[in-house]
Length: 267
Image (tube, rainbow, N blue to C red):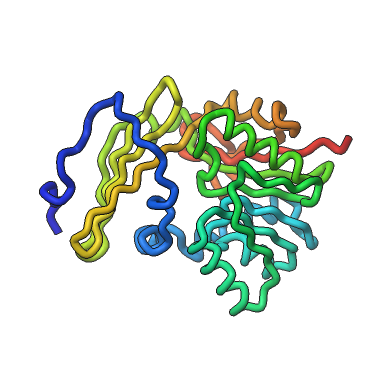
């Protein structure tokens, strides 16, 4: 299928026009799962779960908080391993899918519709997760509030894992770029750029399905490795380690991702 610029319209190249984050549009379940299904494979999820079990000491039943849990990709699999999981997400459609799968597989997972900036658990969990680049959706003060909420939610000694883009990776250095994902006659067009003052990746995403255009703009704040190490301590946790991928390889400047492990102090 040709790149239909007549449908897409004029592409705004202005660096000053920063797109807002349209949460409802970006995380509309039908389009999201349609285009991401080839990426979010069972093999990938299994690798991530194996990493979490190994690194977060999930060798016995734990209480786990999965923030921005989406459609339960991790939460349901962790529950199947015997963990008591609470999944939190703001998108009703994702939670519906997660609950349906949990019922079908007879898994006990508590799913809650809530903004992660507004959760108020207190020392309830042995482990907290914020995965698939779900950290960095807000202004810096609000991103930090999410970390504070997580620190409060953890029991003393509890562990926290989140992942994001590596600020120094080639992925960031090659921005801006345009990428088209095709599925049959449908398109997902990503037009990503990097804004140094805010350290944000801005994506003016357009989805075209069944001949209809949908704009799905969003951004993600990316942090330098030095910042990543300092953030948990400011929020009431201590930085433990960073990894470069879900295979557990050592983090380097060339790593595309950064996977962070932090811990709430015992006292």
